[in-house]
Length: 222
Image (cartoon, rainbow, N blue to C red; front, side, top):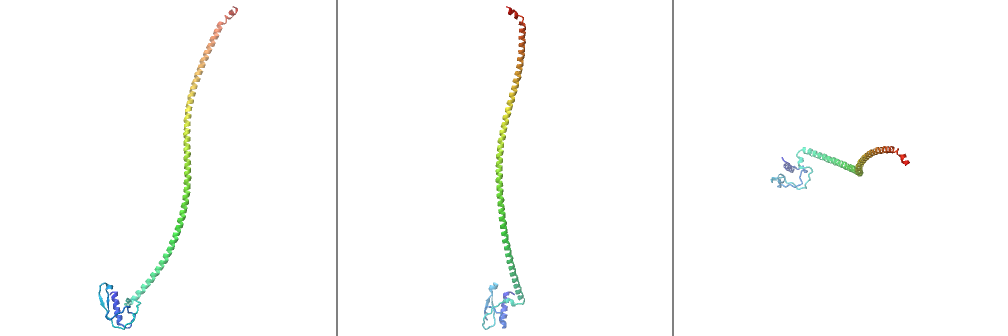
């Protein structure tokens, strides 16, 4: 039996009894009233409810649902539901507290992460500045090294040119020395030849003088 059918049966039983006034619903019930149950079951069946005629009285608001009087177990079910509701509320409060605690922790974590991020960014900026200074110094050193290398290259080229000139000069000097040596040897040879000729001439002159010496007094006497 459905809840709606139980409710109407309980209303009929409550109408027949005269001792329990707390079970009346807030709507008025007539001796020939009709209730359309199509809204509950969707079938559009009209059920006639006939009750005894009673003197009109002010309806009493029912605190408990009508289904609560069907059996004693419904009160336990309601108590269980109320306990569940209290427990759920307690769980909600605990979850709210936990959520607040977690929110505070997340907020603190964000603050710490922001602080760490700012500190890390500051350190990275300082490191970047130091690295830029080092790169600048290295560039200057590289430029100086390139200039020195270029100067050394020019000096090496000049030294190579000087070496070539010196080799040429040395070759020319050796050639001149060789010519001078040859000229010296030729001069010495000529000198020796002239000396020999001079000796021969001296010998010839002596021979002539020796040959001409007896005729000198005769010539004086004449």
